Length: 242
Image 1 (tube, rainbow, N blue to C red):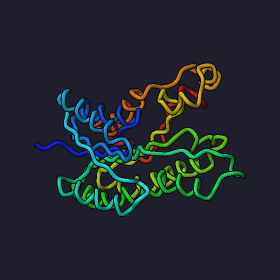
Image 2 (image 1 turned 180 degrees about the vertical axis):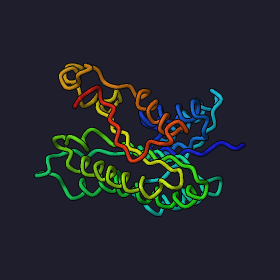
Image 3 (image 1 turned 90 degrees about the vertical axis):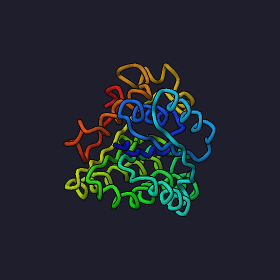
Image 4 (image 1 turned 90 degrees about the horizontal axis):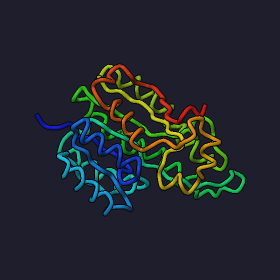
């Protein structure tokens, strides 16, 4: 029996890498690791997964370019239906709204929210035909609580929440679940540049940043058969920040 195919956007980032390894090695899925600017890192991750007995490949396209997305998906769907989709990629362009440029607003919305439509919609009918699927959208605590300087990012991620709840209802009869994972401060290169150890201790009741592997473990569960009755949920993973 062939393995189910899982597409992970932003798969070369810290959280994306952990998710790719979990889905390949714990769930035994064939993982498709999307990247745009970090092809070498994505290829190294594929090699690591294959060395550990997993199955993986790389795909490269710009999430802000609908035409590139369409071409890439056509090639991937020619191999097999994608039954697991992890919308993980995201970008920041932080500034107070009063000083935020139109370019920064639209770029963040395009990559973090509009790409959800461009990527997810073409995969739905092939996924529905298999009568099994998992769609997991990676959001942020900023979408729930807000965060100074991130009106664009918070708006985009909050938009994912509404889209996910609606899509969960639409796909429920086809045995396809749709959920959101909303991390807080996770130990990544990006968070290390934003938060000191002292700031993390002050902000997070558990007094530490989460680990990418902890986010990946939750995604791995939601992407499994064991989570077949969990859908339309926004699940925070943030060390009791609220």
